[in-house]
Image (cartoon, rainbow, N blue to C red; front, side, top):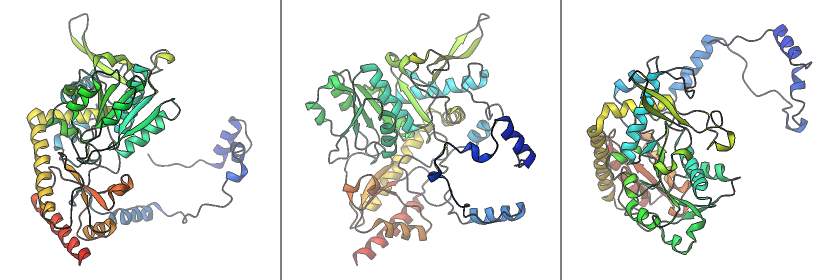
Length: 453
């Protein structure tokens, strides 16, 4: 839709209708000290053809992120998505401006969401899934609030290896909730150290949050954690930011988790500058009615015909406000539908094969880097498709070297883990070819020789 500016007469009429004389009257509640005194430093307006040419030149200056060898993960993973997934998800039956949280959605959309829920329960090993949330960070925060509602306890323990972005969202959500967030340290293997819980009164602990694979790429020992937390009333919350990993690893639900939640972007959604993402949320049946969002169910009508309905929606629009579990206004319906189509297309074996390819590519990348004198690995725990690397020189120098070769390097771990010094998190998925991995390792070796000479 093209932008059509208002005429001066239309502007005056609008101001009259809302009872003010000028646009400045709309700003009278804004302190004068906070108002801009000068015009914005913007270039003069240009014609539409000139604007299109300018935008094309600007776009051309971007690096070819979708084709360049990429070794960065850290919560956003590049996976191959079959063309049929986008073709199906882009059908007009699914792509709509209508916000799909009302109970009268079409049967097709409801069925697709039901299938998404079903496949997420199979991946996580949990009996109940909702129809998605906005993203992984939000899912973690909602899990902490659920634990607080369920136990009435004020403390939530969080692994130091939880995605820092998720931690930030969690702290924002709980800041005014009379809840305390405490951190569990890491062992030399990169796994979470649960021994500090031995000195804590677990009656005051609402939940313990572990991410696996964690932010450092290490797979947590969920069986041991589940056994440790089982005698307590505290909820065991498992976060997964790389959902494809569940196709190869033991399901968190089989390890005693009460809540399994996280990010499902890697199940059919491309990496596209930070969104749209897809939060998933699964629980045991005990916590079904404490779960945020909504649940789509399958039923039979009076004629015996199968149908799908919004079985549960625990937001204030649908139930008494004091009974609402959150103020979530919708979900990521189209993203969830896309994810369901991806999982259906790949199938159980296809997901397993893709997960195993990730593990094999990562093992090969790790072996190549291990052969470079000067590079070390801070942690020796098992990994899925990413791991930390300690560097002998400044990361900025390495990133510039890789960028000149058209390679997207790893994630800067110094931002959230300054104790690791110069280090980065590198990731390999099924989209990385052997040639790309060799090229990356060779450039790393060249850089190491340069900084050590």
